[in-house]
Every structure is written in C-alpha cells, then in structure tokens.
Length: 102
Ligand code: FES
Image (tube, helix red, strand yellow):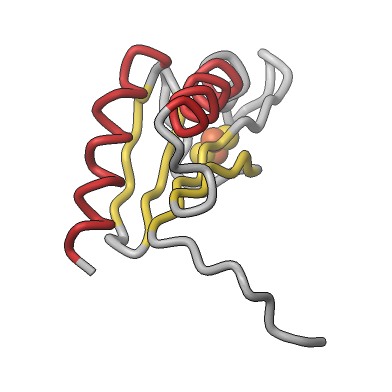
C-alpha cells in the first residue's frame, strides 16, 4: 500500500443503511440517509469544498435512530442522530468549523 496525497480537513459519514421494515433493529437510516447524503454532496460541490470536506455514504454507524439517519463528523468525533435533508446546511457549518479549528 502507499499513502494517498489527498488530505481532507473534515469528513462527514452519512449512514444510508436500509433494512427491511420488519427488521428487529428497525428500518435503519435508509429513508433519510440518501437524501441527506445527496444534499451534502451537492452543497460541498457548490461551495467548492469537495476536496477539503469529504462526504461519504456509509453502512450502519451503530446507533440507529427511530427517525432520520446517523452522521459522524471527523476530526471532531461528533455523532449526530435523527438527521434529515433539512439539516444539511447545519452539518456543513459544523464541518466548516472543524476545518477552521485546524
Ligand atoms: S442503520 Fe444507520 S446507524 Fe444503524
């Protein structure tokens, strides 16, 4: 392996995991995650931040909310639950704050 040259200043992981509605662990983040992920990607591209602020779709983050989806922000080590597409701007602000703190 070799180390890549890209170094994001912050990274948002958005859970897009979907389960069957009758799953004992509930349906997961599949209802809200993809829309929030798409909104965050769109906004980072629009702001010209795509190389510095990475937005990554991921599987289960281990804390499955009853509504919305889970999001983590690194390097802040923050975990957000019950997030929806409407939260994209707020999450982006948090991520940009993380950039500024470095
Ligand atoms: S399914 Fe999203 S955190 Fe578990």
